[in-house]
Image 1 (spheres, rainbow, N blue to C red):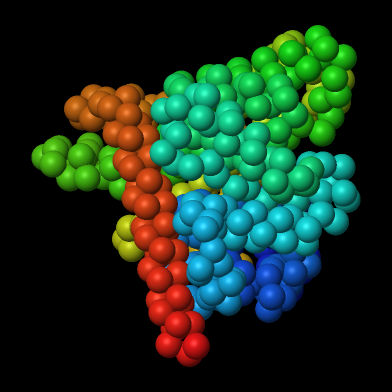
Image 2: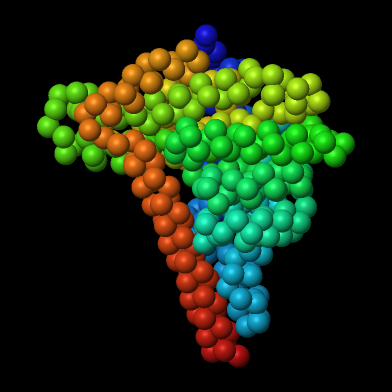
Length: 380
């Protein structure tokens, strides 16, 4: 099945016809003030995600935040407090712009995500406490709190969802971990039903990372001198995501899910993350073209979205691909790549990268506050 764009210059409405929502993997204050985000929403954008790296680049790479930092330069607030205030303000403002989408979709779309500190990825109690605090600070129904899908994150995800907090489960690389996250979502909905609490406005997505899988697998394949290894390059990220989608279809076809759906539950959509192509030898819209399916989200970097609007192909490409995807993973094992180890390494590296960005972000804020204090003192 294919669809054509109904909005000049954007393929997002056509994707929505096929059941896929496009979210933007970017957030900075300038796009709110300039009207750029409002224009994207008018063109079919359905949500937005953020992470420590995005905020680090936004605050460190522009002067958009300098006025606000100058106001708190001499305050007793910690650098963490300052960052959280900035993040809550930006995410809240973006969520307000998306609120009509949320209302018109009956709570199905229009979400903006804010991540707990990556340093809490192995701390269940700390994750719950910070998720609750950020949720209260934002105080909007169309916000999601991002929690890593680590083993320590699973009980935190279930607890927060049970308490009515929308959760974007991030840093998923394996189908095994995806199934654990899906079970946490179902268990939370069941817990709410048992307490006669509503479940029709509980929302969650399971963010499955894609291009990072190919980067790690391709590096391992390059060390294997077999023709079959070369043939697998650039294919495993999509194959792994397609197996996750097959698991999603299995879960949503179960009696357990049907009982919850009858009470108004919404599916926990798979969200394709890390969808900017990193290898220039591959199509620059590979992870959009090959991952289109009903009840999914693709969160896209701005440059990749522009490329897809220019030359992407809108057609269903997820359903019915399970057998071929499974064969690709089986062939990967035959040539000697341990995919379980790949996903373990990627989860560890993902946490480390976000932690590094978070540390750099706090350092940027500290340095800017120091410079602004000196400037103010000189002016005085």
